[in-house]
Image (cartoon, rainbow, N blue to C red):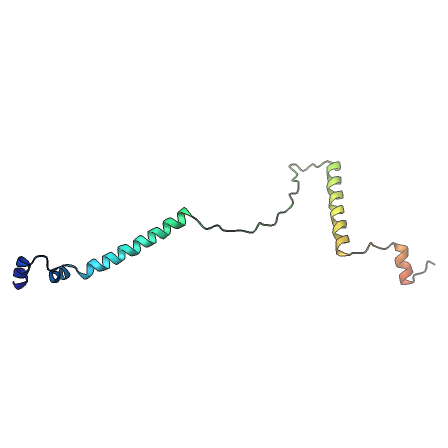
Length: 114
């Protein structure tokens, strides 16, 4: 009853204002501030996304695909020759020696014809 009379005669005193503000209001204000900051961060990320640099994947050569079982001899011959050229080039780069002839191998092993 005293609080009511005090409020009736002094409606805007500081003591009454402090009683009017509750802890729930403070917690709600903190939650609102936190949610506002989170929303702002999300908007910033959507508006200015970070650039992700990806390394380029190694490319592979596309090999011609035969659509039918029949492959003309000329085409097959060209494919085989190209494959042999690439193999020879790789062998040269890796330092492979050229194969020896039969006579050279026989001389190394000391095999006599007789």
